[in-house]
Amino acid sequence: MKDVRDALMVAYTSDGKTVRRPLSPHLQIYAPQMTSILSIMNRVTGIAVSVGTLLLVWWLVAAAAGPGAFATVQGFVASPVGLFVLFGWTASLFFHFFNGIRHLAWDAGFGFDLPQTYASGWAVVAATAVSTVLVWAVGLWLL
Amino acid sequence: MRESISIDVRRSQLGRARGVGAGHSGVGHWRSERITSIALVPLTLWFIYAMLHLVGAPQPAVAAWVSNPINATLLLVLIFITFQHMHLGLQVICEDYVSNKWQMTLMILGAKAGSLVLGLLASVAVLKLALT
Image (cartoon, rainbow over all chains, first blue to last red; front, side, top):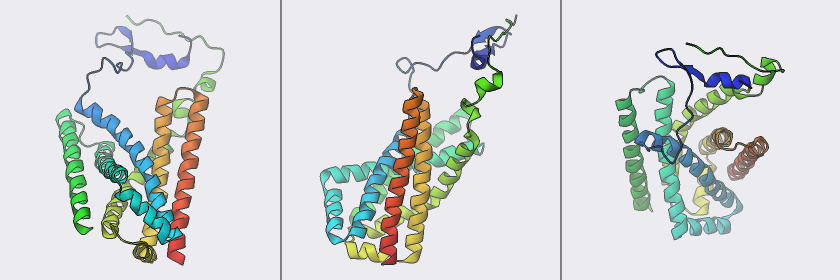
């Protein structure tokens, strides 16, 4: 051992043999599961929501600047690209919101069984889809 | 049979561990991330409700809505906690995927600076609408 951190790689099998811990599975041979996909989606949507805050900041700054600047933002949001960005932001926000609650439940020690993990995962997917469609339906109806 | 474990070092073990992994302030970061996420649960629901309330509204209507002290305060809290949570999350992503230490540090500082500037910009806009 060259480095004290290598001590973390030493492990014992159940029959007492010393082994070097395996590294994380390589992405190209790792069979994706629903749980691992949702796990990385939490980060992807986190980045997407972060990028989406640019739209929120632009919207607020334009509202403070006056009716002209505000009309520009509204024009962008109503354009095909703007609608796509806003829809993606809504879906990402809802996914990160519901999966974040799932993570908070795990942090509190609930829902670690494999069947429960899959059930909560599908619940997050369903809640994201329903909420996104519902908010857009209400939004378009109010418009 | 357990193989004997010997460690070939000239520096002290504490010196090697310092600044690596849990040698940083990981607990505080982890806790801040959870606390901000709990706070964001009601704030996000309120924000979605507010956006549905304001959908398609012209600038004077939005300005009037923000000038309500309750809306302005909730917006400022939402902005503060959102950008706090955002930079904490972006920092973890940089730490996990950027292996070059210099690059990682620069990207974390960039995420912090970006979150700070965006948060302040949004706050100043809200304050201008709220106080005029």
